[in-house]
Image (cartoon, rainbow, N blue to C red; front, side):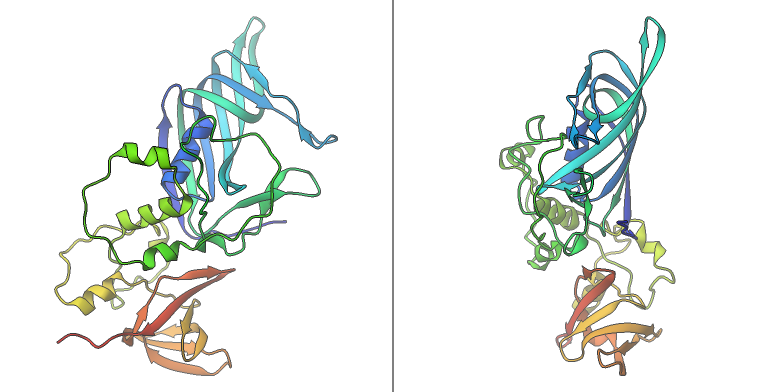
Length: 333
């Protein structure tokens, strides 16, 4: 059994325009918002559809059956993941249509669907990266362990543009996944000077990478986190929108050190600090005055002041969330 737990979820609700390809529309949303793992549900109407079945004996997909008739989309369920370094949508539907003999109900894997009017809900799991590889037992591309989870992002582009030619809902041979590059790499670069927004035409010819989408999403919606003194009592308060911090409710602090504290992430009890001198230490207790009790690799315990350290963006290794820290520079007078 393959299981991963997500604690950081974004929820999207929207509508696809008439004439859009359903796979293309959902994958474009995934690329634009840096989504590597998601669950999708939808209802509505289709102008036409192609359904296909999987032959378990032959271990291959049969030729899709095309329905060039108005169809009601009673239900759509599926996932968004990645396969062959490209975003991949696996969608399954229940459809109905009027016939001379009454209402006919159809079902299967959606190979292609032309939208008449479709409304959807998409739940994106920001701390996961679901990767599909060939399953030896079934021949199907199935979920497999990602080398380093959500801390990495694809570098390979999805093609010149997300069109019918660029998105491939059909099952094709898969290969071993290359390690994904960390989104934190994009965040370590200094913030660029403000510039006028680029025209939308410039993005289409070059294609969009996972790294570009993740970086743009973070930079556009980054805002200060609460200070350590006012840290929330429960982690759930920040789970709802982890990748999009709320807009500031006050002007930027005049003091540079205070501004840095507002911008830094806040570790939790049970997470880890990567300290140059002490090594990888687990947080066992956090006091109101900023004191942090650490359990060092040799199982000794040490009490430190977190305010004297600069907390960097975390990385995820398995089930552990690790915050690199380094000594903070002298404060300005």
